[in-house]
View 1 (cartoon, helix red, strand yellow):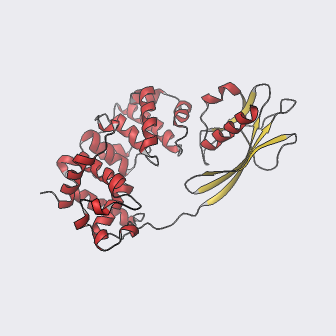
View 2: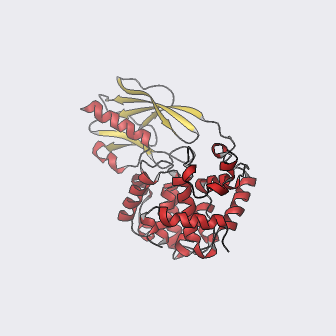
View 3: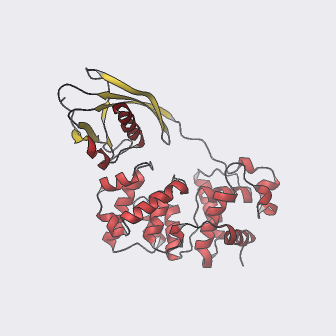
Length: 333
């Protein structure tokens, strides 16, 4: 017999579930691609990227055959670029293995695939009875059952994971998981949820005890730091200087113009923008943009190369560098 909570969630889903293209297929590639893109990305933005990826690389084999540069370029604007690199590497894992693994453990072995993504792919593509636990699920369960255990602790992960699994209907895992995600995303939202119109109001502990705004509980652990960057767009004879960022820092594998580490080079520099603010997960970047048009071709530091300006669009760059390119374009009018 289904738990009353499970029955109510499934009933709500019949009338209020979201219509999304990756839910219209059982293709594990299409489902996996959507889950990776939607990590840290809103559906409105992520859907356009998913559609572009599916048009350009309609199969996992096609994605695996692409170059990392091509994938990073297509990903540009989504941020969290490690997702794109892991996506590409996992595609090659799948092709080398002859197809997607059909077990939860096998899915977990793919690069960049964690517990949530493995459960999503497994239940949506292969009907595996594994519960998803993401931010939406944490919020719904914490509020409905009145759980104050911090969700970003080992104890919280275990408690919520066990509860989610106990509520999962084995014969309708995909519908239940999608229902939980949709309920948290559209009904039991983080701020100012519409509790008076909630079908679970009568059994909701948070509503009864007036704790909706305080649940779920999350411990504050990470300190946000600031980092200053100075970029110089060098323009000489229709070319500019770019380098690929290496491992061990932000934006691994993406390209950037000349980055000043100590002092500005000699010559007339044109300031395009100052203190351009760009926010990462645990870091705030403040960047100054300059344009330099030297009279003679300067010698570039190791790692930089000359690139024709019209070919810049072929290189994957972070959003901050896009802003620099936009400032250069305005200055050139």
